[in-house]
Image (cartoon, rainbow, N blue to C red; front, side, top):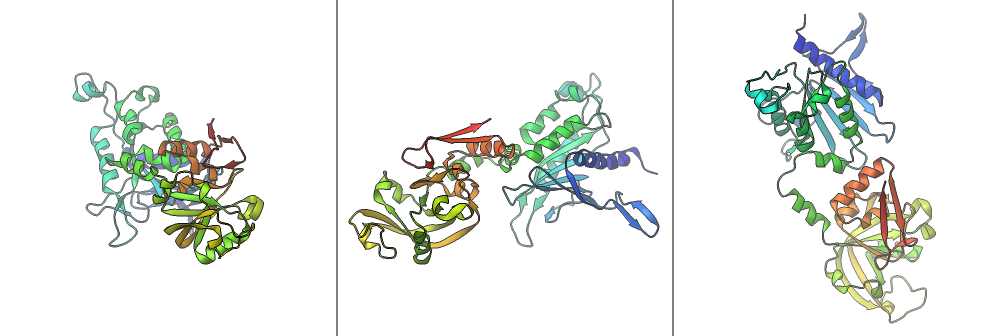
Length: 403
C-alpha cells in the first residue's frame, strides 16, 4: 500500500520522463528490468533510477535522476536527496547544468483571512516547500574529489504541486520567481503539464550563457565579467604563406609589419598571439585558428633581421613587430572561418578566444552580445555580414543579424 504523497512522487518522475520522451531520444533507462521471475519495475522510494536522453537537434546528452544525486554532488553538512534532478550537458562547455524538480503533494488553498491569502491571493505551494528549494540549491555542491574546491552545482530548484489552474497560477509570486531567481513552483497534474513542458524545452535549448543567466549570481559577477571582456589582450595574426607556420612553431615567434598596428600603445597590453590559417593557403580542413601562445617579449626590427624565415620580397628595412612566444598551444578544436577570414590582424580578448567557435565571434564586444549570439546560433538564426571578404581591424565592419 502506498499513500497519495508517495504515489504523486512516482507519477511526477514518470510524467517528466513522458514529456521528455516525446521530443528527445531515450538512450538508457534502469526503471524496467527483467529477471527470471519476469518483468518488474524498480521505481521505489528506497531505490534509485535514471533516464538518459539525446537531443536529436544537436546531439546533446541529458539525464533525469530519481531519488539520487549525480556523481560528484553532495552536501558536506546534512544529507540532501531531492526527488528528481535533471542534468544537462551542452556542446559549448564542459560544465553540467542541474535542476531540481521536487514533488510535494501539498497545496495551500489560500482561504480568505489567512496569512497565505493576504500574501498571494490565490492557492499555491506551501512556503516551507519553497524554502526547501532554497536549501537544496545552497546545500548541494560539487567537488571532483577529496580536498578539491566545492562549487554550487544546482542552477535551479522547483516545487511540483497538485494544482489544476495553470493560467491563474502564472500570476502567483512563486511562478514569477522562477524567472527572477530560478526558484519557484509549477502546477503539475495529469491535465496541467503545459507550463512544466514549456520550461523543460527552454532549459534544454538554453545556451550555456543563458543557463548561467537564469541563476542568481554572487554580487560583483557583472564587474568580474566586465573585466574579462574589457581590454583586448590577444592579437590574431594571419599567416602570409605556409612556411611561416612551420617557422613560427619551430622558433616560437610571430612577426607582422609594424604598419598593421596603427595604435602602438596596444603592444603594451598584448598577452597572447594566435595564428590564423586561411583557406586559400591551408585548405578547408586546416583553416582557422588552431595555435596560440603567451607573449614572452616583443621587439621592432627591420625585416632583414628576421632570418628564421626568408622574405619572399628579399631583405628590406621595413619595420616588423616580432612577438616571442613562451609556448605554442594547440586548441582541441579550431576556430573555423565559417565563410570569413582575417586579412592582416584582429584584436580580441583571451575570454573570447577561449569560447569562440567561429572567427566572427572574435569581434563580439560584450557578454550580452556573446549570449545573444549563442542563443540565436543554437536556434539556427545567426546571419553574419561583412563589408568585405576578410575581417580586418582597420576597416572591416561586422554586422550580426539576430533574426
